[in-house]
Structure formats: C-alpha cells, structure tokens
Length: 312
Image (tube, rainbow, N blue to C red; front, side, top):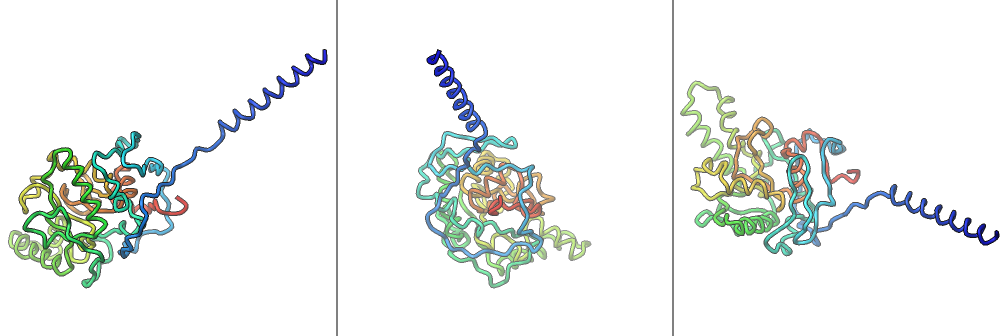
C-alpha cells in the first residue's frame, strides 16, 4: 500500500512540473534581435528638418517594422513579407567591408527631410566629408561628389547591380551647392518655362519649375546624400523611367540604405514628378522601413513616425 501511495505522489509531482514548464513555454515572450552593424561613427552633421516635425511622435499601430529582420551577416536565408513587399537580406557580393556604411552608427544624421516645405538650407551650407563617387560618369566627375558614407554604400549597391547585369549605371549628378541650385532653378525659370508660358504669373512659373527642380536651399542635392544615376544620356533621364534597370534599382535600394526619393504615384506628396533616377541615402534601417510600409520620407515626417525613438 505504501509503495502504491509513493508512486501516486511521484506521478502527481511529475504532472505539476510538466504543467508548470508548459505554462512558462506558452507565456514566455519572444526575444527580439538588436543589431549592431557598425563599429565606428561617421560624425556627420545633422541637417535641420521642418519645424512641423514632432520629436515626441510615435509610430502608429498600422505600420509594421520588425527590427529583428535586419541581419548583420553577409547573407541570410530568412526573408520577411509585409504589406505585400518582400524583404530580402541576401547579397550576392561580399558587403562585409560596406556594412558600417550601409547601416551607419548614427543613422539619424542621414534621415533629415529636405523639400519645398522645409526651412531652406543656408546659402553657405556645405556638407562635411564630401568625396568623389567611385561610380561617377566619366567626364562628369566635378558634379559627382557625395557624402563619404553614402558614396561607399552606393559603391556596394552598384556592385550588386553589376552582378545582375546592370553594369552601366553611373552617377551623373550628386552634391550641388546653393549657388549652383540657384542658377539651375532660375535658368529653368527664365529660359524654359517663362519663355514658353508668357501669360503665367511668377508664382505659377515657379510652381512649374518646382515640380522637377526644387528652389535653392530646398534641394536634397545640397545635402550630399542624394544622387542621380542611370545609363542614358544626360538630359534624357525620362527614358530611364520604367526600364528594367530602373525597376531593379527601386526594388533593391533599401538593402543598401537608399530610397527612390520621388516614386510614381506619390507626386502629390513629394511635390516632384516621378524620377526613376533620383536616389537618397538614409541608412538601411529607415530605408527598409519606408520600403515595407510604402511611404515616402515626406510621409514619415508628416505622420510623426520615429523609428529611432527609445520608446519605439
């Protein structure tokens, strides 16, 4: 009798232990993966964004970002699909030497909004660490200087493009000074739009020009973080739209920290016509976030999103 009693007690104890372990397994929270892809800071200046941006705003529940999907290895077999877009962290080229540029240590320094609604950059603003892009089109080198971090990330981006057969993409324009943008803007104003539309007012002509060339101080080119790149003749960029190369660049830019800045269908939001050749560096985390959620940098700021908030 005593032996049967002991066996019964042992059996009950085993059941209790099993139930406790099952409860812990079911309710234990999943661990998220924090990723550190950089070991040094690029110490770049932060460009002031619009005064309307809210520093305390949080990302709303209707957006999706899984930071653990960012893998700090050169190639990951995992992929994620959110909002109908597939995230792919597989790289065909060795990007180990580029990771600290693609995902810089101080990504907020590269995320500033510059558009027709933001406070203009000053006429004497020149970004630090400008270097000649390794992907500059021969003969246009003087117009192809970029921020050093963005230039290195772009180098990896176009190495990957070359692997897939798109080996003739080159940078035709990058950093532009305030004065250069001033000259360009008013050259379009007087020589093109004003002469073609003599009956329009000054504000109407400015609106026409601003759809494809932003006013001085409000062009991303002055930040050194934007570049125009394609494989067609300069001045014939429109022929690059919807090309196989353009589609590949747009679909893969986020993997290297770039975004297609003025996508088709977002003209009312960006204030610019569709430009398949204009890309902007923001760092991989933000670039992937914008890509997954199908929003522009303008929408990111307008809605008060902040993926770098400690509370995010």
